Image (cartoon, rainbow, N blue to C red; front, top):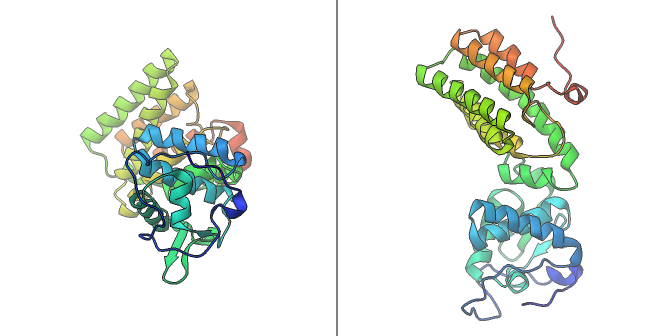
Length: 287
């Protein structure tokens, strides 16, 4: 296992190209090990746990590790990321490093340029709507800002989606939404928060997808990511409650009746089940 280096020296050094390494690859070396210093060990465990749950393997683990370190600020803007240093530090192959950096570049977290190398990009360049970045921010130092911003964004997206969905209702969609509410009811009765959350996420994702607006449909992943972010009552969907279930049922009833205004109102009520939410995102004024 590679010995740990200090955070100051772990990624500094001359810029290297993605395919150029000073060491030979050997079988059995593709292992993700501890991050650069002991302060990052908890972060590393989170990354490995998240990657394992998604079945992403080594490539996903490294993306998680580096992504979390960048988003948390441990790797600040304009910090050089030397591929060979990363490979040696995490004991992974050049292919794993190369593909991981490409993923991070697609998310706007890093940039790779000839004669400059790979560097961390400022927050203004990040794709803040990327589900992975949403998750990393939600579990990092920016967690409060991330949850507030997600709540505000959901207040913009979902009531509108509910209104539009009332005009695009199809029998099979209505049945599927009803099925999700029924599953949530059974899960609530059994104290099964995992099943409740999964049905809840499918409910909201489906609702956005049937709104008949392709731009809104592209935002469904944001809502799904928001529903998977734990910690703190951001919306009424954060924990299984009778009140949450009632509002979901009201949305389904309004959609079935073609009542766009009713569906929108029920969604707004759902998003403010918890009193704490009203202090974050106040309800719109009545005109």
